[in-house]
Length: 463
Image 1: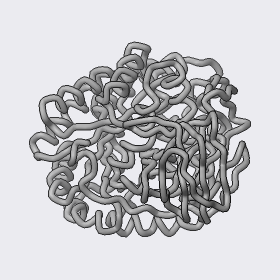
Image 2: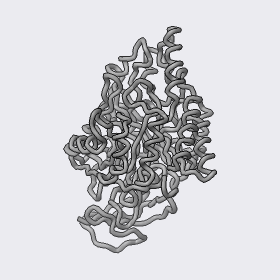
Image 3: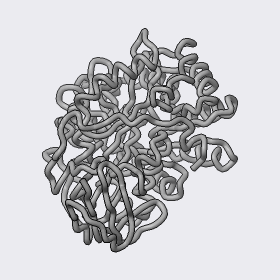
Image 4: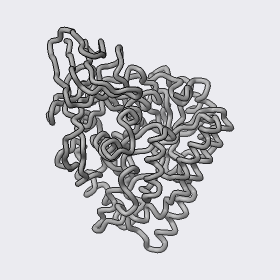
């Protein structure tokens, strides 16, 4: 099957030009101007922006917080509807089992359901010496990244400095990228208990008990651990000016220190947590939402490349049933919010349409850099001959309002409810197959494929 996409504005990280893309089977066969090629299907993309399919490197399907578990891969069509063709999900180590066994078990669950392509990070739940000995072997199963939680004291996945340091030492020679959720667990534990002792139980106290300093300190500490280990490190979901500056300064000093932020931290703020009638619980995520000062710093960081990617940190929790588990005790509100489908529209609307970032920078944050970080490049994240034909045709002029009524997350609320957008995907191709067409999903469960990641990704190469 050959498809010829003609007359679109093709955007990469380095250029944009009006041209054509020839797709043959699952791959991009040719890119250029006025391609004179035969094809079974010819698509006129005049007036549309042609983008690589998005790579969302931070999602949480089937993630449990205390007694609540997020929606699973039956909702992965939300990725396709939002122009994301590949997600990198977090696979939690099963207690009592190794990382490789846990990943293999999880892959068996994903395969029959996935509607987008997927790769995986390992997540440490049992920081034992046996686990650290296994880290150098995980690239053999296509997983070149491991995440450790420095927050959540008392939870099974909390990792102390010793665990992070051992992981860094074990990972560096194998090209495994260590990722950390950087918040000071002890500070948070004390502040949470103080709030509860004072009867401060509403969602807003989630932010009060997780001020920017807990992230600033822990990010700086993680950087020193990486420096001592002589290893790269990647800080996930950066939210504060101080944490961003610590990453920027370390990189400028020659250290392989990198980070990302997420869409909600770019557009929402602490006041969302103060909404009445327990509405604030919808916005409980960790780290907590910040003030405008921090949002402005994050926009500067993604524009200038100090932070490398913008992810969704998608967590498909319900508000009425699951978030309400924390009514009367904010520490029991499941952390996280849905956002997988909305990443493109939020970042394009608030970034490109409002002139904060260029279209080329958008492509890097949205697709190319995440693919590089996770060892998926150049198969994913780029419009290039030989790459997978993951292609989005975006109408930059379409306007509308984000609403849960049009969401495939299957949750009972949308994080960005009521937000006006400018720009929407019209057609989405996954490995050359049309899977979304003008609001209609053409994808079935099981059509997504596992994409093994290669070790020694961007955090080792620096670009």
